[in-house]
Structure formats: structure tokens, C-alpha cells
Length: 367
Image 1 (cartoon, rainbow, N blue to C red):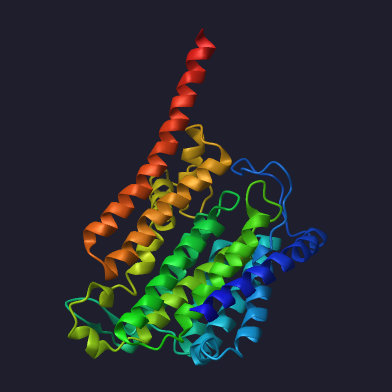
Image 2: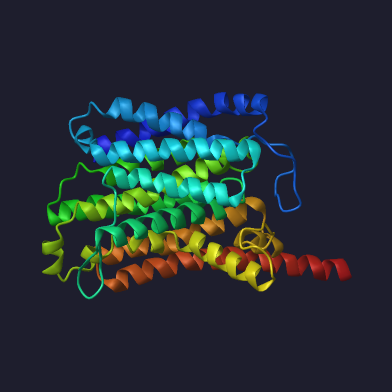
């Protein structure tokens, strides 16, 4: 555990130090856009935060590769994740600078998933009626769809300063806890790509957040959102590859069936926002990829919540799904439900407080 904590600390430090340098480079290179109607910021802010994250990830890998435990996590899968992450980050850089069309981005995301497949990062089974071992072509197709879904879920929630950064940090923390505890409880190898990658993601997000929290000095852009989404998806897939399918088939433990379901649970808020946006736009006769100002964070802002309070509420919503799911895998369900209710209640209190203040202001305005 100490080596993973050190890994996260190194990634956080590197990201924090590299971000100002990348910010200056982004401004000189024109990696920013003018202020649009749907944007929440009021000043021109550079993108390319993902470049700083990628640089931090690369340096962290070089350093922790020499640690006794974490160093054993590096192999073919970790290499594939790094190469796919590098490709998707470059694609995001180009999009941040030149605003690529949706088809090009989707093709690039599929190609990044293909790089993962070439390095053995693939969905091999699904928890359907026990364990269903998938034919190779079906597993490859599901891998590509899974990776693209998680990438775009993270990208969709990147609409407020610090929002996607914090939500991904929460999701990665939950997934790290799950993968590490699962290894301890079931006697799996603790040195694995899932724990390594999520520890690095946690560090990158924590190091980037001081620069990205409201008012943001730099945005992660697609270079960051797509990189983080790919890393989360790859972590989930590699975890399934480390589990003995025969052992799972004979186990009644809930934790054995969660590796592929967990990402959808801990990313419930981004995925919900993604689904709602697609349905909303299709019903309005628009492209599902058209931009609008009706995301969850926009609606919370319209209720009267401040920028920072809206971000914090969405952090709580993400935590409401993420941590109780992990707890339910290893502890009685009632404990998980109590924790979920407690976290959700705090978000309700914050929203109610905002509505109360807004109502008081309206009354005062009429007096």
C-alpha cells in the first residue's frame, strides 16, 4: 500500500509542477477558444491540461518502475495502456487546438481501444448466469464499446472548473480501493495494472485540481478527459484479466462479479448525464453530439447554486454511488446503504439551503 501511496504522491507532484509550464505553452500555441454561450468561464482559458497529466504519468512510470512491489505491475498490459493513453492524449491535443469533428474523434477512440487489444487488454468474460466466457471477436467488440463509453462519459461531465477532475479522482479512488482489497481478500497478486493505473490517475487529478478548480487557470480539455476515461476503462478491463474465472464460478461473493459492473456504478453521474444528453438532443431533432446548456451542472447552477457549490454537490453525487458500491462488495449491504444515504443527504441539505436563500431573496425583492 505504501508504494501505491508514493506512486500517487509522485504523480500529483509532477502534475502540479508541469501544469504551469504546459499552460504557458498552450497560450503561445493557441490551444484555447473564445467564450461560447454554453461556457461557464468568463476569461479566455487555455486547454491541454491532459498534456501535463500525460507528462506526469510518464515520469511517474519511469520512477516507480524501480520499486519492489509496484515495479512488478509493469508488463505487456501496462505498456499497452501507456501507448493507448499517449495516442488518445495526442488526439485530444489536436482536438483542443483545431476542434476535430465527432467522427474523427470516435475513430481515434476506437483506434486507441485497438491498441489496448493488441496488448492483451480485453474483456474475456461477463457475469451472466454465473460466468460467460466470450468468443474473441465479441470480447474485442465489447472492449472497444466499453472504452469509448467511459471516455465519452468523462468528457461529457467536463463542463465546470474542477468538476471532471474531482469526479474522476473519486471514481479512481473507489476503484483503487476495490482492486486492492479484492487482491488482499482473495489472495490475488497486489502488484497489478489496475492498482498502478488508478493510483497514478488519483495523483494526476489531485495535482491538477489546484490549477483547475474555480476559477480555473487551465482546462484539462479533451486531451485530459479522454486520457482519464481511457485509463479508467483499461483499469477495469485489466482487473477482470487477473481474476481466475474458475474460482469466481465457485464463489458466492458479490465482489467476484463487480469488476466490469463497478465502472458503470462509480461513473453513474457522468453516464447518466451522457444518456440524458443523447435522449434530449435526439428528441429535439438535433445531433446527439450537439452542444447545449442543459447538463446536470447547468441545471444545478440554474437553481441558484454557486459554481463551487455545484461542483461540490456533484462530487457528493459521484461519491454516493462510488464508495457504497465498493463497501457492498466486502461488507453487509445495510452498511453501504447507510453510507450512501448519509452522503446523499449532505447534497440535499446543500441544495435545500440554496433554494431557501433564493426564496428569501425573492421575498425581499417584492417587499
